[in-house]
Amino acid sequence: MVGLKPTYGRVSRYGLVAFASSLDQIGPIASNVEDVAILLQVIAGFDNRDSTSLDAEVPNYLEEMQGDISGWRIGLPKEYWGEGIDEAIKSAVRDAVSEWEKLGVKVKEISLPHTKYAIPTYYMIATAEASSNLARYDGIRYGLSCNGGTTQEVHLNTRTEGFGDEVKRRIMLGTFALKAGYKEEYYLKATQVRELIRCNFMQAFEEVDLIVTPTAPVLPFKLGERVREPLAMYMVDILTVGVNLAGLPAISIPYGEVEGLPVGVQIIGQFLGESKILRLAHTLERVTC
Image 1 (cartoon, one colour):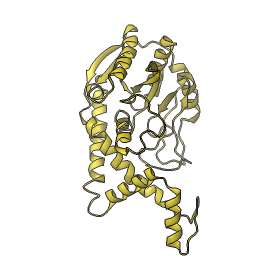
Image 2 (tube, helix red, strand yellow):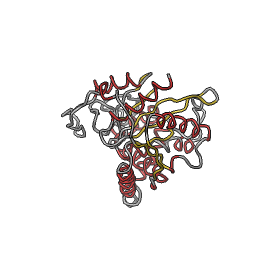
Image 3 (tube, helix red, strand yellow):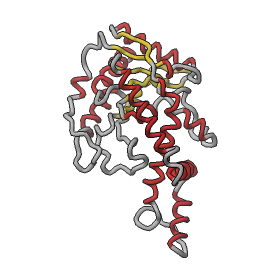
């Protein structure tokens, strides 16, 4: 599958069930890049019902997906190719980069030095916002409602039965992070680091047009295989959460297989740079199909 996360605000979030409001995004998933472009064309655009929606012109993604990529500059952040990334995945993504080089793309190593802080920053912000957003599910106003002798029991029983272990874990972490005396130490500090991560990307895009990385550090694992290892599960996001924190667009496209399992190539673009992302991904798809 090909999946695209648009620039934050490019697609309206009106009607979305909120998890982490400053991170939540709606994006298309399809079996090829062209279908992703078609879906994005339909859902992108300004919506005055969403205060975070961007009032920016929507280009013709199908038209802009076509064309030459010769002379484009691709950055490979060294932090995304280091220890912890499966060597077979690195090799597959480098093969994809080689295909683009044959078409005249220039490649250079870049640095996103605050990447190592992306996971704790993301999960601090996400859990804090989730704790606030999910407070509305109290068993009284809407949604699931479980019986209880008192209002407090209804509230407790509903949230006990309605939320899974991972959701409860995130609510607890987020509530702790927002407690008086801890908010400055954890949540506000995370928002400051988030800005540093965003600045890293902005500086990198002064040197390159697009950034290419693996999508995940390991091969796909079986459904439910890591549910008892939440920290291991969180680390799988190491290569994608930085993009979310920066509010930038990115696409994941499959390229080749290792041990019969697909490898994802992630292409990260500049603010409102979906057209370039789609063109580079489409080019790779045409070369390999």
